[in-house]
Amino acid sequence: MCVALPGRVEKIEDSIATVNFSGNLVCAHTGVVEVAVGDFVLVHAGLVIQKLDAEEAANMTELFEMIKEIENG
Amino acid sequence: MDKFREIADYLGTYDGPPVTLMEVCGTHTASIVENGIEAMLSPKIRLITGPGCPVCVTVAEYIEKLMELSLKENTCVCSFGDMIRVPCERGSLRDAQAMGGRVMMLYSPLDLLEIAPKEPRTTFIFAAVGFETTTPLYALLLEELIKRDITNVKLLCALKTMPAVIDRVLGSGSGVTGMIAPGHVSVMTGSDIYKPFAENTASPLWWQALRAAPCWRLYGPFVSFRAKGWLKISIPRR
Image 1: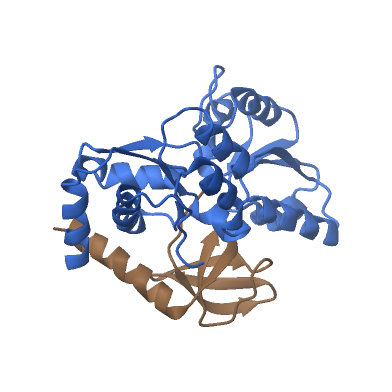
Image 2 (image 1 turned 45 degrees about the vertical axis):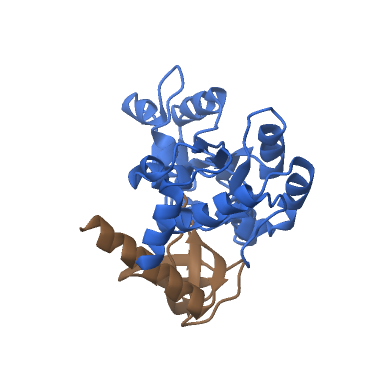
């Protein structure tokens, strides 16, 4: 139930955000955190729980890319 | 990449005072195992798995109750995927499903806002497990259910709070000298909830998001803090 990849908000309709996780689009409720299109967010079980600043999101994405490189040899 | 190698070398060859670190969160544990992090550490650094996965620490009676409910007429038990396979003496929710029970795996409890109105004669019971991270999600669900006048959804609660658990572990003579606090819980609560533990037990606590890279990045400064005798709470910016 816990995943913490950063995703980018693509669209918001009512209180539901469409979040892009490396190409996978996931719907998430925005009832706890105010977000805007373009924000990077963490989503827990269908709920946006944290907004990240762009630098933090880029750092996390870079780290995950590094891990992918290591895993792929 | 150089930064990783630097940290790996430091942790692999560490020869200071022995350090015992507990990762509270189950997803940290999974990342440590999947990525072979423990095998890369010096024998002076010991890792202990903590109690922070709400699914793993769910008591057997709770699962038995869910199984029983799933077998009732016009009742559907809904749960996160990982809970469905957790066994008690009588089996798991998956076994209950095989016995004819109705069990539905959901990505989010909020999915019930769409599902429940389509079957008004069915009572949907969500297995509401979790710590501080997941509790607001259930509150949001209840708020929406009331707002939309949906009356066929119930929660079977087994919610827990993290400070009581951490207090128990640090006060139990476990020998834990530092703790990686749960990332998602900290997002909800802020870091102040950990201060009393760091001050009273002289154990550093550090919270971080889940997954391997941050985990790995954490151990370097953590061990270094212990070796230098830094005993206060150490929290990266929120």
